[in-house]
Amino acid sequence: MKVQKPNFLKYPSLVVLTLLLSVSWINKDDDFVKKAFNTATPLYKNMLETTGDDFKNYPHSLLSNGKLRYYQIDEWTGGFWPGSLWNMYAYTKDPQWKDAALKWTNSLEANQYNTKHHDIGFMMYCSYGNALKFDNNPKYQQILVQSAKSLTQRYSPIVGSIQSWNTRKSKGDINLWEYAVIMDNMMNLELLFYASKVTGDPLYKGIAIKHAEKTMQNHLRKDYSSYHVVNYDPKTGKVLHQQTLQGFSDQSTWARGQAWGIYGFTTVFRETKQKRFLNTAIKMADFYLDHPNLPTDKIPYWDFNVGQKGFNPDWNFEPAQFKDTPRDASAAAITRSALLELSTFVKGSKKQKYYNAAVAMLKSLSSDAYLNTDGENPYFLLKHSTGNLPSNREIDGYLL
Image (tube, rainbow, N blue to C red; front, side, top):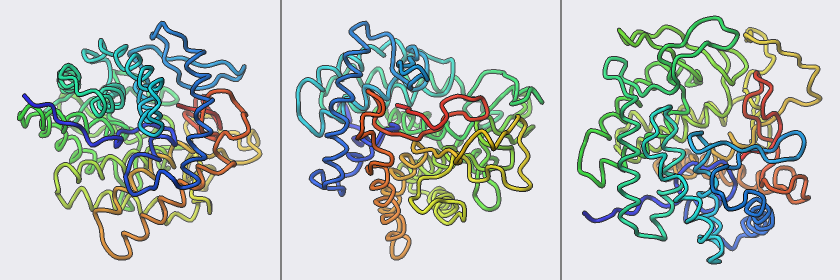
């Protein structure tokens, strides 16, 4: 069977590097592109030196003491590091980056059998998917197909969705999530579409479409804002709860969750050409771009409704803790990548709106306000990302 090369660099990586090279119509010689890669080079060299050669600890974020926080092979961001290294090689053609990317990619091989959660697309498609662009190794296709098989084991035809997390308590221990599906899961569907393409088996694509349909049905409000978590009854498929874990409140819109949705539905339209998915991506994008609480630089606050009247959190929110409401550069990075592709699927004013917004976001992320040009930390490219503020983790910090 012939190995199909994936759509290079359309895989989600929460760094400016991926965004800069994710599409061909951003000129690699533009000053802000050069600036980003020039900034990344010493940072990522430091990261390589610090992580060492055991290929077991995957850099994730920066701890308050200035040291790297690592995740292990089964955690969700492992594929972002080799994906970033592949992007460095794509831009520079320096073989040191390819060598490092190959080693870190191959270190994830055992993950193809990971069925603990839904994020195998993040882990394996960002790494092996990018690797296929430069190393046409049939083994990589086999690993990706097995990864897709592992992901399908978390699919329930009763619920019509891929289970994101195993049984756990909700925020504040208010209820039990037996079959939690989170908006983030839209990002892992690309792996399933790929598996159907290279195997000819429609099973994977069918599951991806069913999951997208159910997400469209239950994760979105009338204004196309989004819930982070939907909990289902695994026996009946009934919606039990629509909540959040990382957002401000159950009725608010977590910025990164909205970004996952814009990107995910854009991807599903690309793979299916079904207008309902395009319409969803458009409506979610418009919610983001037209929101009155979006700052002028288009880098969102970590939640669109932080502290607003009528939005009641299930955790102890203390606004005085922050001089300024934390932003989330990672949410902007994901949204920017989605908007640039989305602009190719629409015409007229919409096309211009999404393209212009994408470039504006990219220039903001490449400015000194967000790009680590002053060596504020020795490893990470972007400042001002927020992972899970309600749990007091990764607040206004540095994320891979």
